[in-house]
Image (cartoon, rainbow, N blue to C red; front, side, top):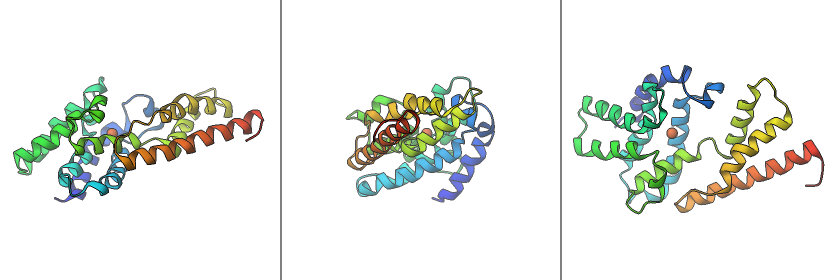
Length: 211
Ligand SMILES: [Fe+2]
């Protein structure tokens, strides 16, 4: 399988969405394709420990296509996972990919935004790894920068309002570790520690006190 070709296909399909549409992330022209590239990198790091136990090709294809459903640019973004599975199936069919293997890949895409699937005993490891990788994007240092960027697009912006925004989103999100596999749980804890220390330090910078 030529993964570069798959990335190029998904990039093309997402191009329209990346420049308009979307929700709060649209304020900063959030690129769904760049998100996909980052999720793929996280997935490769997390999957490293399980290469003998998983269908790596299926996981790679599912990760590349996991958010292609956004390209339909519908008002209701909640269906992007199911839409993505349909679009991926069409693509795999067009290149003559075996139907049974395509079924598994499309099932991963269809279920990747179902939060309960991450901790369900029935979920294949490939789905767990895809969901963990997806959750890692925009967290920790990256989440802090994104929060600051989003807040900076607002008319009333100050250091204090940026700190409040970070506390409301990134900091809050990091407090409960949602990860399931060992390496992912550890990386989350590191990101959480960094986020906590950042918020503490910036609070001292803006309001005084001791670190
Ligand atoms: Fe995603």
